[in-house]
Image 1 (cartoon, rainbow, N blue to C red):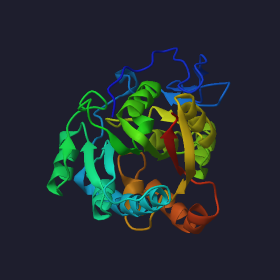
Image 2 (cartoon, rainbow, N blue to C red):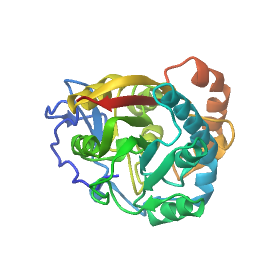
Image 3 (cartoon, rainbow, N blue to C red):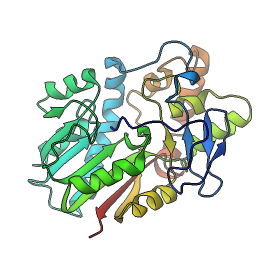
Length: 295
């Protein structure tokens, strides 16, 4: 991840540079030109009480989804390149779910992780982890065939600066992979609707309000592509990924203090009942995009 500076009270859109106005809530900003949404949640002024962070129990609940999506992503990458011996850098590698799968596929792996607790978890499974922030902690002479951001790009304040750093760290014909929540997904649309009706809990949970590392952006498929292509990349593939798995679903819903036991149970029941639609029919809440840097 990058430790770049946050936007101020009157930020400019990360995608098109337009001055943005207050969005659905005072801590949200929305661009009237391209629709990009951003938050001010990196500012401590929007926090009250202790922040939630890494939890080893929550990690286990997330593992099935992360491992499932890692396998799907590697399949998409394999259609572009031969995986064996690819030099892979994952920015914000967390406990190493993606890199473990990449290593099993014959790729040469390296991770960056600023959270010592998560870096320890990745190191425990044999992953070479650089502790710090991208790109400051990188060896400037290193080049990679694939640089990936799995559930990380939405946490980065200065996306444009990070994309330029990626260009400098990619080998010729290297790939950039972005995998992140989508503002066009059904869960996010429902969260916005509930907030308009006066219930902010789902919206705050999706933005990770009150967490150590909240979301700073919610991109759509279209404006994310605009941002990345403006930075000198060419899209090679795009698609969606599952956002829920049945294993660990209840625990994920109940994580944090967004819902009490009764409300959490109702939310869990609703998601469980709608799982087939969420998985196969309705607009996806996780998107991936794969790019090469233009010559």
